[in-house]
Image (cartoon, rainbow, N blue to C red):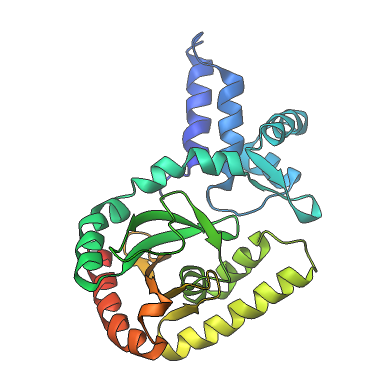
Length: 268
């Protein structure tokens, strides 16, 4: 069985201790060990962090205090912890350099120029969609987003397509991550929109945002499947100014083209 990141860091900590490595900063290693516990989990309790890392409760408490202060970890509901915004910001550069995304850029450029659309790839980050690759249409759009920008998951075609392709457990994790207060009307509205989007996707195999995120933009999106990870990890959209297209005409034209582009990207 392949070692987890936690195993790898633990091995390094033990080796440094055995070799009496004076240059090795043990406290930093333990902090990274704590972060590694989230490799396969969205949220963890204090007790679970102790069990996964093998660190004493007092050590975990001190590390959590430091990481919470630095916003590398945040405290969610029911005293569960999850990765925080600052850690996600730190990893944004790595996301931009993912092989599938990086290799897709020439295809995005060709597609945008050929079909006169803006085309983008995004993935979920803390209940929003973060742009990882963009190529702008020559047509002027009201909203000019760039790599690193985030948009509401439930209001955009990108977010709806991403959510709709996930399994039920992954969908629940996304719902838990939505940036709205638990039980608020905003969160309930978002959940309802995502449920409706899933039903629509199951029937049509694409998702649509017709002026809902920006009143001037018409966008269609589909999810992207990562062959290596064996799951849907991103979504791909094509957007145009609403003034230039009727929705059904745009859908009929762009959906087959976007599906073909998605297949090309997935095979990279």
